[in-house]
Length: 315
Image (cartoon, rainbow, N blue to C red; front, side, top):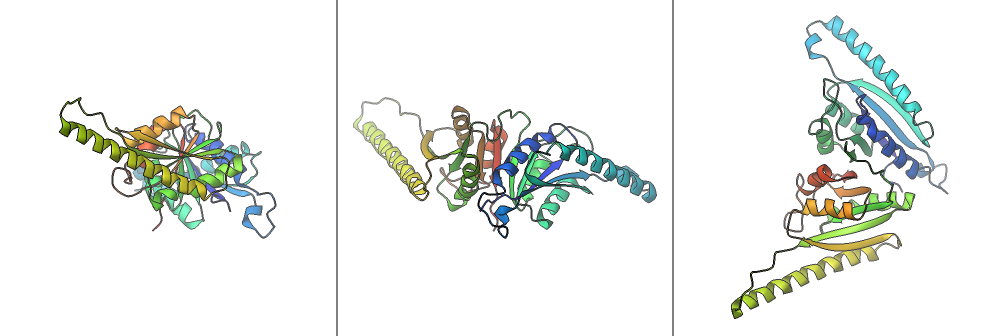
């Protein structure tokens, strides 16, 4: 069954925030309704696409409750009108489109709505414009990513490649069960759009030792080479086991070594292989091949030149 049937798109009225609309529509189109599903099966129903606009309270007017309430009412009405027009642009999307306008703190309101209304995917732009009702990456989008009860797809402002344009989805794995949580959603989306899925495992690389003529130096070099070979073989065997679990002609795997930053290496790999979506878990374990939440996943998000879908671990 598809993991994402209830999709939330937070909007702030800016063109940059609206960059999330097309990817959200593409995902909604890809996931439903599913062919052959029965009328009692949720997969037989259209996806639900909710456009949410949050009106921020005007702190300066809080001293005058009557004026404050009137300004909020006018802002809500304006937001509803904007959402109605925006929803019309999604008329060809085979999804149930809903529009909702609420007042509150943007990040808190988005997370609360997702929690209370069964949202399983939030798709949002990495930032909007500046100003009281415009969102800045590092603020609203980052708070939502950290606190949302569901997966979050972030479309950064500079991204020009479509979310399924090249039909290549990259899933970086570190050997942990937590990192593997990204595999199910990635395969489900890939199956819906006939996309390839690339499994990537990074191993530690190193610079060659300085040339030496001493026997001790040669032994050290040989030992390090043996360790590198063993680590790569272990990584390849791990990915082979993952691959063997799935009868999928569109599933591939690769092992790459890097002596530098893991996140940079993942982004460079995605660029070189024309990836249009990276699906990655929010955190893994510690160590050279294990990732820390707030480190690799977020660095990939910030550096990627394509859409990034963060699958959160729910304790």
